Structures are given as C-alpha cells and as structure tokens.
Image (cartoon, rainbow, N blue to C red; front, side):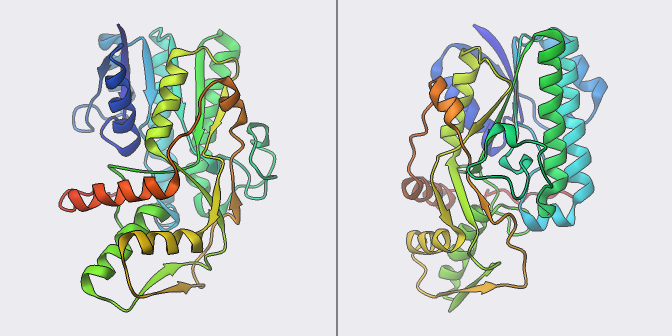
Length: 314
C-alpha cells in the first residue's frame, strides 16, 4: 500500500481527502496536527519527510479565508502560505517523493480573465485586489510544481478548485468564505428571531461552488492517475449570483426575515466560473448538486454547533 502524507488533514479539505482515501482502502495514510508539525518550519518538514518516507504528498494545508480575512491579514496570507507550500514542495523533491498534489484556488486567475476560466489564463492579467495575497502565494506553488515537473520530470501536479464548502468548514464570520458565513448568519438570525440579515456587497457577483467531497474524488483520481499536464481546474460547472445563493441558504435554514445588502462593502471578482473540461475529459466528474450539498452542510453545522471552527489567523 502506498504511503500518503496529507498535509492539513484536520481541515475541511484535508479531512474530506482523508475520508475518501481511507474508504478506498488502498493507502497507508499519515497526518500531523499543527502542534505536532509546524509546516512553516523548513527543518521540521524536511526531517519529517525524511523519516516518514511517504510515496505521495498531498498539500491541503493553507491559511484561508474570505474577503475580510484577506484584507485584515495580508502578511499572514502571503507569507504563511508561501512557507507552508515551499517547505512541502522542496522537502518532497529533495527526499525523492514520487508524486506531489498541490491544491490551490480559482483566485489565482486574473480578475477580468475570460469566462469560464481556463488554465492558460494564469498570469495574463491583474489579480482581484481583495485576495491577491493568497493568490500570489498559490501561483508561486503552481509554478514551483511546474518547474520541478519540467526540470526533473517528476509527477508534481496542481489542482485548482473553485469555491469549496462542506463538513468541517470554517463558519467564523470574520475569517470564513461566503457560503459558510451565510449559513452562520442566517442560522443565528433565525435563532434570535431577527427581522433581517445584513450581507456584504450588492449580491450581483456570480460564483461557482463545489462540495468538498467532489474535490476529494478529484484528488483520489489524481492520486491513481499520471496526468499529462501540470495544472487542472476542479469545478462544478454551475454558477449562480450571490443574491441567489443567499435566497437558497435562507430557504434551507428556514429564516423568515429579509435580506439587506451592504453595498459599501466590496463584491470581489464580478464573475468566477471554472472551465474544468480538462480534468473531466481525463475521467473525473462532479456529482453533488448544490442544494443537496448545502442541506447536508447545514445539517452537519447543526450537529456540530459547539465545535464549528473559529479560525484565528493574526
């Protein structure tokens, strides 16, 4: 059985990948908590990879968050992500790891790139200012994997998922992404019987969402295949406006009040739809429909209200 180290295995993405690979029953999985291994510490990461000798490393570790978190903690979003991914990529390369799967985000693409976003749109224009710190770090990771692949012919591949959601998400209102933040806002307003919920922006931007279990399937697929290219988009192929998303979550949560939009707050990128045809043509297919996925995520939230993640970045 191949030995796989999943960096960030306790997070939403990492835990979904762990569950899927464990179910497959074909791998020996390894994970380390933040207290056990600081991925920002180069010496510690090199020593761990040298001792554990994994066949495959999956990088699902990152400092992540929504518009507010990116704007509040730009240095952490840039530097911590650079340190984490560079230490993992370099250590895997130096210690002879045969396969490396790097996970990034659709925010690596230019703010006004042609839609749907194709892999060759990378570095063709200016980034979205509200998440450029995170995006720059992730672009560096993509190019590092591409460079190793080009120079050393190693099986290092990057998967760029669209907006993710699902169990073990971050529901903190300061640091979370739009979908889990809305679940939290509408739920709290329902419990407190408030008359309205205030949501950032105009509600007009278009967004695509992918359940984290579909991403885990893509990672399993990439683990078992030798993909011919270095970069693949991973998305559902379906988009809706932030306003439509808010109405859908309001209905699923059962909030009876109104939605108010704070147009003084930024919208972010006006549209962000991925072209995932390369990975789909290779053999992966997304399966979880958005409404069903949100219902399952809200159910998970209700069953874990005492332990939902309150992420502290600063």
